[in-house]
Amino acid sequence: GAGVSQSPSNKVTEKGKDVELRCDPISGHTALYWYRQSLGQGLEFLIYFQGNSAPDKSGLPSDRFSAERTGGSVSTLTIQRTQQEDSAVYLCASSLDGLTYREQFFGPGTRLTVL
Amino acid sequence: QQQVKQSPQSLIVQKGGISIINCAYENTAFDYFPWYQQFPGKGPALLIAIRPDVSEKKEGRFTISFNKSAKQFSLHIMDSQPGDSATYFCAARGPEGGATNKLIFGTGTLLAVQP
Image (cartoon, rainbow over all chains, first blue to last red; front, side):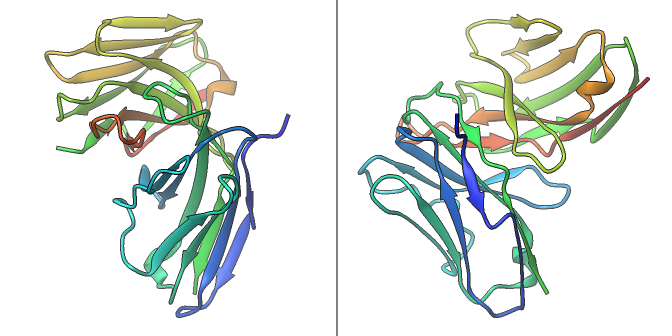
């Protein structure tokens, strides 16, 4: 019974470097979300993928952030030219589909530290 | 319009007591209100959720009270146990016309239940 998995669990990088964060959703889930959790803050929506539809990128904070989802399964969140304010826990979630009341299942997150 | 305000930021309750966490929202188009529980190092997990057409939902020791006119909802944990010690997030589904299922989260409440 695999849940949502994310890798790496921790990532330390230097300011200005690019990083890639990976999410493996629950098998068969067509909807995938990325959120960011900063210290003392709630979860902030970043991007949403649903099937073959165009992703909802409305939460991406800048053009340094991008994400893709290959083959409707694995997703990668890329942060270019990382800044210290990018330090946070990045959470991925998936749901069976994009219907309103579908439960979102979260992975354990990737803790990103930008030095 | 998109905010969900959560209080208190932290809460200490004695074992057996009642824990109460409150949330308020602004956008009357929100149509789904889940509560998530998060343990350290883990992703959030759905605890209980309510739709705005009911005023209360109970699951075991956990109850959501919903006041549509006041645009407020709260989580009550009866007979609180040390194992309930975690961070709790309220959330609301964004009114995106069905195009997305993104959640807007409160800032979280750190609950500590003392033995």
